[in-house]
Length: 253
Image 1 (tube, helix red, strand yellow):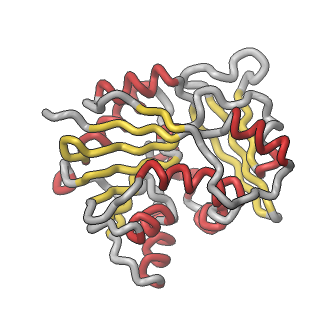
Image 2 (cartoon, rainbow, N blue to C red):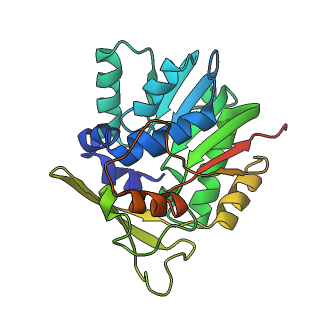
């Protein structure tokens, strides 16, 4: 993520923290990501684009030995440090990927990070930065915009979410195209821009970074939960979700 992209998020920390309680995140997105992460006991994990540090804290709860959160938005990092300190978490938060972090991690997590690469060169550079942090055999687990997200800007509104491409009628899935994202629920709202990347572009960028075949994991609803949306919409959403979990392994070399 570039500094201009990161600047969009300087004032959004409280909203992002609250979003963990929004039903589609609490009951679908977050359990899906954590399910792919699996057992983290004794693992060294870096949360790339950590935002408020929510995932970093959950990862520490999963038994990770060392957790580092990285973000370029100082407002997010300040919030993350305060939350971790208040809750007694031993997590390091940094605003730069220094040489001492290279090849130090078993897992890199990147939730909603790939969509903030504003060009193919930035996407390639972002994946290379993530791969550089991993030990050989380490995993990258990312949550990008789903390459086949629903193009109707109103489709996800029951979740408090909207994706609006510049040309949703004829070119909603254009590589490198801007998607205008808006969030609105319970009197809270925010808007910012993201960039769309196809399955082929994401896989090519990961391969160029030395990451192995990409596995695509669909979002699934956690057992015993019922998000507060119409069941018919929930079925439609799970068939055409806004995001997807990807997983790839750092090859030797």
